[in-house]
Length: 114
Length: 113
Image (cartoon, rainbow over all chains, first blue to last red; front, top):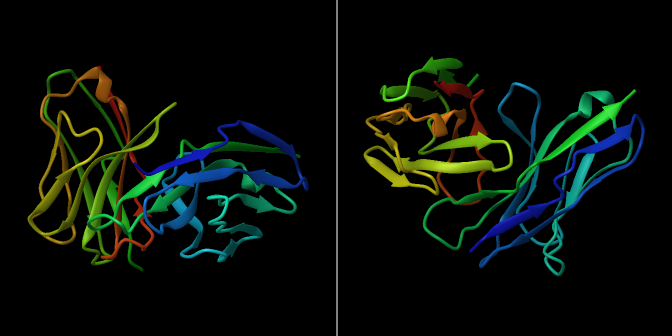
């Protein structure tokens, strides 16, 4: 079946540090890939997405590239801020089955210290 | 602006009681989903619907039911609440088609005593 694996953390960084959160996936078809962010006490918000191989999704300084050859979608940001502290979820949507079937990774908690 | 809302935001109930969590979206999306979020388990799919009168079981559907009588609403019912159902519940919706993002509500924190 489909699955998403991501580093579970927690990840603790100093402000302005470089961020990488690894995400790899297993899927039978050609999935779309997503990164969602969840701030404390809130629901998940879409951060970025990519729908085909070699696509790069980007938003708010975050970016991730859809790598089909390594089945990966790693999230990166060049300089994190305290306001980036949140839980980050990698997810895929596989069109191979009926309708929409999202699979989420376990989430990675990021804490950015001033 | 279109949105997805959940009510109540917090609920405390007792074991054995029936509880209904509301989800309402104004996106006019056909697809709607219920998830629960627990520490160590991430998000797990409870039930989902691809349109009016359509409902499907997800990964952890035991003890839960849903009904879809219109496009906007997908209420989640716990028939007889159990302590194991203490969790944070999220509703989401999306446009038809497998490649579209899901939009999430703010969540309902349910405590079963």
